Amino acid sequence: MAEQSGHFWETIWNAPENEALRGKRHDPNCLVQGDEVFIPDLRVKTIEAATGKIHRFKRRGVPSKLVLRILTSNGMPRGDVRFTLTIDGAVTEGRTDGDGFLRATIPGTANQGKVVLYSDDDDETDETFSIALGQLPPHDVLAGAQARLNNLGVESVRATGEVDDETTTALKAFQEAHHLAPTGQLDAATAQALRDAHGS
View 1 (cartoon, rainbow, N blue to C red):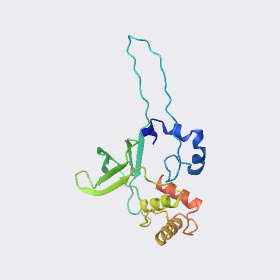
View 2 (tube, helix red, strand yellow; view 1 turned 90 degrees about the horizontal axis):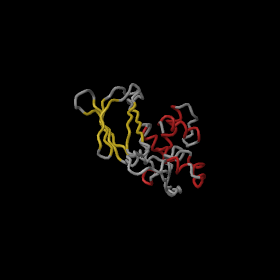
View 3 (cartoon, one colour; view 1 turned 135 degrees about the vertical axis):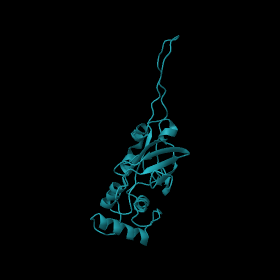
View 4 (cartoon, rainbow, N blue to C red; view 1 turned 120 degrees about the horizontal axis):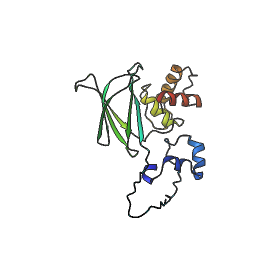
C-alpha cells in the first residue's frame, strides 16, 4: 500500500488520521477487511540547483524483507539447506543459515512466491512450498490465529475466522505445548504465544 502510493510506510502509519487504526491493530503489516486507512497526499519537494552543472539525486526506498524459518517435523532448524526462492518470477538461490532461516529482499508489491528445498548439492528436490505474501491476518483475530496454527503444523485448520471443532482442538494442542491453560479459546496470552512461535 505504501509503495503503491509512493510513501514510506511510517508516513501512512504515523499519520494523525490513523490513530484509531494504530490503537486497534498495533502492527502496520496486519490489517483486516473493513479497516480504514488514511493515505496522505504526496508532498512536493523543491530543490534549488545551479544550471549548467551535473547534479545527482538519490531516490530513497525501503525494500521489503522476507524471513522464513525452515524446521523439521519435530521442530528442529534445517540449517545449511540449499534453496531457490521465486518471487513474482524473479529467482534467488541460497542456503539457510545455521538456525534454519531463509532471508531475502523482495519487492514491496510481491504477492506470490515459491520455495524449493534441495536434499543435497545436486538438483534433487526435497520439498516445495507456495507462499501467499501480504495475506496473513493479525495474530489476535481468529483468522490470523488459524492461519498461524496451520503454518506451524499444529493441526490442519482453515483460516475462516469462525470457531469450529478443528480450531478448538488446534488451540488446545498449541496451548498445552506452550504451557498455557488449554481452554481452546483465543485469549491474549495465546495470541501472543502464536505470534512469538510463528515469528510474525
